[in-house]
Image (tube, rainbow, N blue to C red):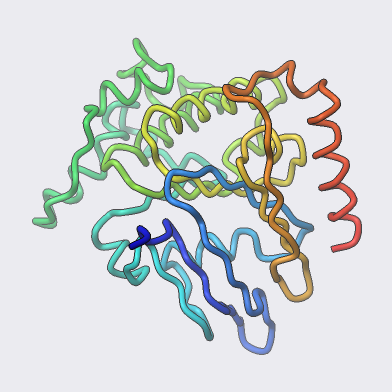
Length: 255
């Protein structure tokens, strides 16, 4: 018997009034994999993540996470969401921000799953050892996003949803965080679904790239990315990387 997919969408559609944001989308996300999502503006990339995370309902079709409804998976804390902005509480230190989900759960009488790593160890995992007591305004944009990632991992989610978390960062910082995220993925075994507008980032991070088409948002193609592991920044200069990028650019131009 096959294990259930990390996320499964079957003929899923999302509508806002008379506007169809996503139409008849079917996709299986394999457990333990790293998928990147690419597509033109307005194709429903962020909407797809919000659909999977139970933030918006499907107008039709089915969505499940590890064989459960999205609501059941949300209540069981089987997934976590990292947004474009780190959304840290400015009066709490980096460590206290990471501990926040555990505190909220205790106050509500909810027994949250606790990962193998403590909040302090997670900050070390994302490269912030020694900055545990720093307030958000004392951290760079890249550091704040690392805190947000550590906070998302504190309950050991099986699925991590990331909506263009590095889009506002400079290229050098983004490259560093891309490498760090791949290391976290390898160490934790968490399934990652990552939205980006960058072709290079989609190829560099993804085992598979999900290409969406617009008007309405729908699945165009899923492209397997067969690059050596572990991935390195110089790999972006190889002919193989360039071929994948060119193929995705060609698809984008016709979406």
